[in-house]
Length: 469
Image (tube, rainbow, N blue to C red; front, side, top):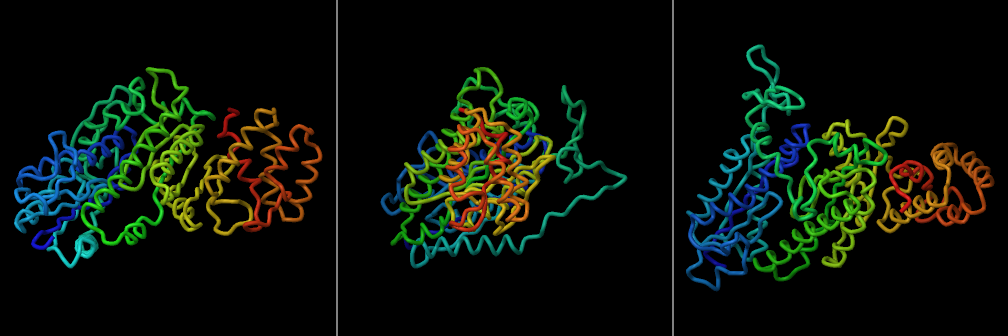
């Protein structure tokens, strides 16, 4: 559309802002703040520039600038900390870019965003790429936020440890604490659990990770799940021509699919949770093509199963990858997310459509060893579900837990010794258990395809996190 201008707003360091504090309520509040800015506050700001493609309920419509001479702007996409808007006037695009960034400081204190606007190029694709490049140049040239050091004249925030404390905060459980201005705002938004009413209105938001972990089996263990769509850029590259309405249709559909899938997965995760009890999950972040949430340890399989069903039904031409970290709730949230990002990269490096995991416990702490024969990770979702089914079947048959855990040592022994130990172990199994074990180990301890490796340690690691359905 010749003569129009595309403004792009992109939130900075979203995960750094959300996971800066350790407490669940503050993490929840940070996520709520960013969600409100991305939609509510940004949409209210847009209305100041005349009429656009927002209805009275704040929903994006299909109204287009090239079809309505009285329309002043058109939202191309909103979600995941991004807002893309086409404007008729350059002045409006410029003012919106500046004002939208100021919303993050106004409502999030330490939150920030980067924006740029460009005139219409040869096509929408070229215009979008130009705007995104301009945003990335500004991000890379921006000053890195300074780290606050200890000083005898001020106290550091006890929640995030990253800014000078400015407010007293009283908590009936933990007592008095002092917070920075950003954490004070986070706490004020922390009572509102995002999407909980859409999952199950009868549940209460968990006040902290400890309360949530009390419902877990094994007790006190939680799982952080990080999901991201594979090769999304290539998906849009294959759409020719790419008009603003095409980009909006596909990107909004992808965003809504992630949301529907996460909600359906959480509904499966809390299917047996009594009404008026704490929710066994916390949806921490829903982006345009990714999601991060915390679940009780045993809820990972039902969540992933329901999420996959929704995803495959609505986006049959795309795949997603996942990283899952099982750990005690005392593990700092920063460590959860650090490992989950690494695992997600591992799953994508395996070709996409895969899942990698890590179990952090006192007895088993095994990081990602690329190409290791001691594990089948990363798994395809089908093989991962088969691993869960095998464990569930063995538990229904009364398979001894100590025998399952013996597989871990076999996987890390010298290969010939491990194979010999496995044969000795197998010979002592009850006949009713051998057929199930053989289905999982059809070639013995070591399998040759798709690569020489064993799933013995994986079965032992995940044994305690699977229930005999």
